[in-house]
Image: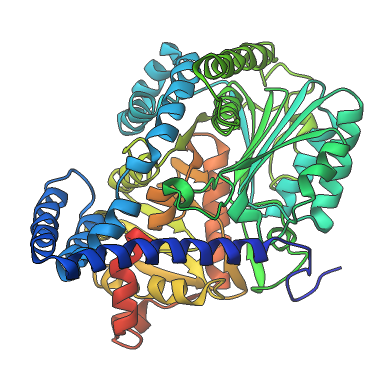
Length: 552
């Protein structure tokens, strides 16, 4: 059955509203006190103005995207006291030093376990240097190797991916790891919960990790207790608190499932009914995902364990903190040992015979044609390396014939805008698919405000008329692609914890390309509309939102 509105479920939206009001009150109180000090003393007011000017120059000299620099500089110079306060509270990493240190400790243990097989890179270099360079970048600056011994399945519909997950979960023998931005305790999750409960009763270790803000509209405060009652361990990423917290703006947007270190899933979809077209709050939902079997699952396992241990309750002293690190090391040894025990996908029982049901049409059982180069990667807002954006930029630079993009939001930096335009200007067929029905009307208007300048450079824009596109994927020349959780907007590219997979070669690239080509006819091309001037006018509100969007 389907319904045309969101399912009415118990949630914690009231808690979010209270937290939001509390944070506004605290920020307002801090700003008001600074204003009072400025009114009390002309010297303090002068010092504030000087500090604002010095800070503006300091921000200008930083090595960060200009889209982040300009809003802060103008805000600080126009409103010195207010701008200084807001920048100190939300524009610096002072408040996340402890969190950043913990992630560095965890990554220092986990990432060295992801070693690159030189035979894979040597073979890749012989086939294509541009993609080999991309893989080198991801390993050098992200710590994630490229794998060759992995079979990848592509799902052009989230519901197909979910069905495949349920089937693989039934075969779990040791452990199940699931990390999702949003979970809705409704029809689809009820099926999943039933499987997880049965596997836990059989002795399988089950861990479930979700983002508090992403799930707050779907879950109530009793969710964790209900899951623990059926044997599922739960952990929440960055719970919203009624006190100012610098990392509160950084959310876990990843979508990962790992089964016994042998099988892994990722993609754009969360565990909620609308993603599987059980409900239709925004028309037909378009989402995609991939399934991996083989060596590359090792990287997904490390990604999950990184977040799981980073969100462990803070220790009270150094000894307990060291104990937490040792626990992480023990976890790593145990679960990565499972990864190393797996069979090679081309010699496993009937090869792909157990995994093709419910997948994209044309998947061949027992064939090695679908074994491709795959490089799962994760992006963090704490390391000052925009890994997700750079993967997109590098793919755009390598395009020679065509570049297809699917994204729910299009709020991009000048660098991304320019690279897309340059690709089109050098003769590449650049097409971008965005939603026809928005989930957030204000953000949708900001997305549309980019159409005109992209069209002027030769980019073609398509809006998915049946409903909402939530897939985040890009394919280049039928040779390389990336599928994952990373939207083409500032929140995904700079503020969220994200993950994706870079893919090269094999039939999966053809399947992703075919998904685009089947989706284009379902879209309304608006290129001419924005080229002719109709709809090109950008309102003042849109300009303001575009200007401050990097900070939101």
